Image (cartoon, rainbow, N blue to C red; front, top):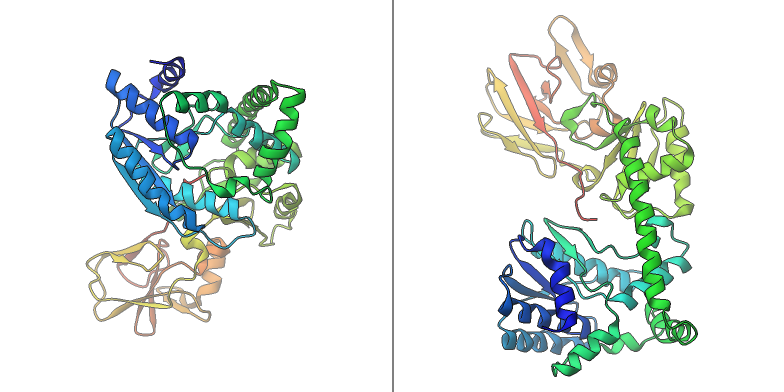
Length: 435
């Protein structure tokens, strides 16, 4: 076993109880060496089952031959390969769009607890730090690439982050490995390639240990970020008392607790809270938080972010994403009210108690609805929901039970029912577990 392979085995020791290890195989130098090392280790140690994943973007003609190359390599090493074709969305940054598509595919391919191993090395880490410095990233961005992070139901692990590229190339040459050279990696119109071919070589000529030093700085910044994350968790604990509307199943925070923090601690807490839900806003867009926080009490401000929205209702802010940002259909027949009804893009409803007779429908507010309540008479639904102080964003999605044109019940509000029945709504969740 070479020193390089022994180092890899040591780094992977904490993950040996995983259901399987999946190698993100592009066919390039880094992932080819990683695949070969793992195949060697599997012959000497009892490892989790190995498999490889190749994502085919189809962005250039040369890439059409890469799945066959990866298949040949895996067949030689006795490792099964899954090829996943993806569509890259149109975007101002082709690099970012391809990366998003790639990691979305990896996350979808992983099973619970599986570990995805990628081949990023020390120079990749140095390039990432330089790129983010040049983009004016904050501390969270300057931690560059973490060694591990959640990905879908599994974990993303980068075991070669402290390994120089020269060591990987030397390993490949000693073992006679063939790898793919992506032609686009030479195109210095891409920022990372410009740093790789123009900037970093000049730095290394003057400071030979530049890549190691930059990677070490990223690690130090990671420690600092970990301390800020601990502080954020403490601050958020005070801002997450029980919600008045737990059946909405929405992440939310109490404004009063956040207002007691300095602006810097507010941003730190929110960055920590939002990081798992959306791409974080840059400095220019943090004014959206100020507007949300400082709006008048009767205001309904919204802060729109990449993957969702923060809505304010009174002294609480709610995170909405996914189905919550779509408009539910106007009418949905309920042919078997004794059974739960799945709502299109809006969770499901169940009806309990003495079931009303006749054809039923689920509708949503369009304005002008009237509820004829026992003992209270005909009341405007809008006024009734105002009395309940239900968040405004939830009202358009709140299922209403109708029999013909007669409103029978409002979901999850037992006092707004005209008979001996209750409409229970199980709302869709807006949690994002992809970041």
